[in-house]
Length: 91
Image (cartoon, rainbow, N blue to C red; front, side):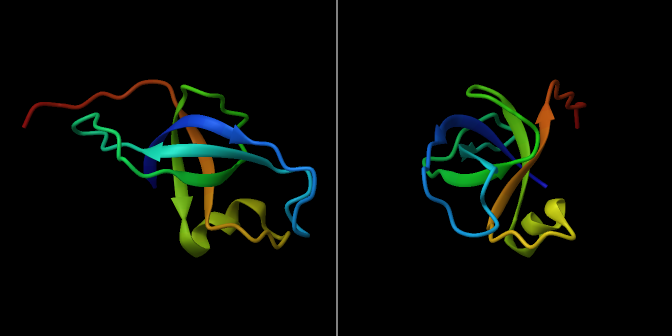
């Protein structure tokens, strides 16, 4: 699982087959050890009902579609968790 912050959403009136009814969010990857946000962003399907400003866990690649099995969904990234709190122990 990777971590990111929701920074926006996508509104689409026409979607590819398999994406109908799916929420699309824009996320910025975050390094959870340092808290630094990447300068890149990713469009990801959302199964958690997260909102702008939420920290989330997401999967990318083939694993991103597993959240929708047995339905086949054409996705490269899927938000699978909302992160409420992070505890990092000292090294």
